[in-house]
Figure (spheres, helix red, strand yellow):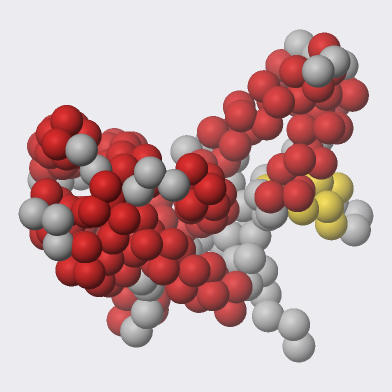
Length: 225
């Protein structure tokens, strides 16, 4: 791989992290010159990194606005959460069948991290622990393709999943759901684990309305007239 290719891969990871953690928000402009100055590289790897991120749907090129962190429509948000819920359910089902005890012990520890944060006002700190809990289940499914696809969709939805946790009472509810999922995985109850995870991730009905109510302006694209 060329030097520019390696720099581009490094930039992709850094920009993904900024988007996932909310440093860069939907609608934020990504200017090649500013990014090259920020990271101390030429525009070539920056351009390559933005092309890669566009391929994953995390950024988009808009007329007269240039490259921005991508927003999605309400319809796309619903569709993506449906897919996310099914992917994570599959991960949980397979993890219940395949996860070795040592990894389950690690999952228990990660669950405790979430529990320690559930009563705090810092939803973003809980989100980081929540990501580690979910990623341990992805890894526990022992299917690297499924793990990669699940992470890809998760990254695309990360700004919205983070916002979800700012809903009143959601941290405690999320933590209780984690406990039930953990119990099912630990006991090898594959179908129960999948069903619980699907319910945990799905956003519909009142949950969807609550999420839409707290989404800041610019996160969602207006519906076409």
